Length: 293
Image 1 (cartoon, one colour):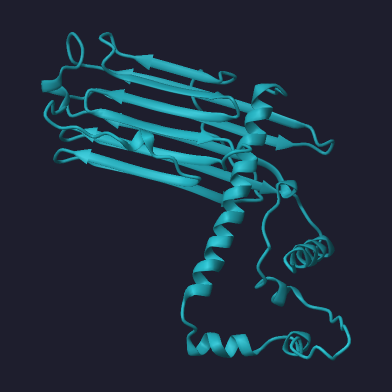
Image 2 (cartoon, rainbow, N blue to C red):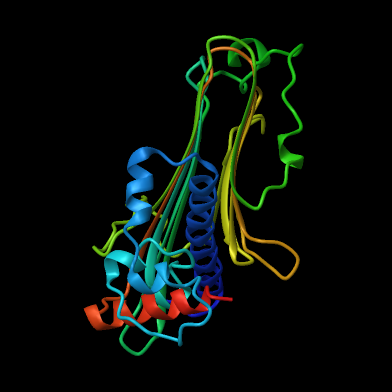
């Protein structure tokens, strides 16, 4: 499906969010590096600076410019991947829950966005949700492994700018995982091949009793994935940034039971525009100059 309506808004929101994470991660890495004590090897590296930097303290010297190579610019702060460099991305989401009685819930989605030569955005979306409940009359607390005396709560109220992963477990024999990957890949990434899901921005499923539910929705420039079982919930949310707050990717697992297997998986692959070596150097110089203030 090629659309320039809600999917395009989602594309812009997720793309800008990914760029913010990339630049934020770079700034965080630089801050951590600056706070660490310099090792002997680091001291030797710091001494090998260009001539115009070593003479910066001589105020009486006239302003002097010297060509700086990429090997030096690559270590300067202020370099980041701007949104104008992103030509497309592929987002894959998967949440799954396996209960000890054989019941299961799965919610899965994929969003692929590409920009053509005319700077037009094409988006393709897929969604899929499925619930399997082999227990007669619906899943009960006894067969599902849920523990009425155990509670796991509070994670839904946590607000974090950036990426957050929260796991709350009350029980024994459980296996749970939150996994998120944001990668740069100039090759065309592949989306998941979901059965009967092409062109649908949302999907939902539940068992007969309504005790197990699975749902996924792309909308309002964000994404929401939710699994609900007698033993807890699993969610994934992508919230776009706004004037009041930065964007966020949040993964949450809450398990109040025994012998549960649950996982959240998110994979975001960013494609960048092909740039000549001259364009790369110009971008590096521009970003370095912007940092001199």
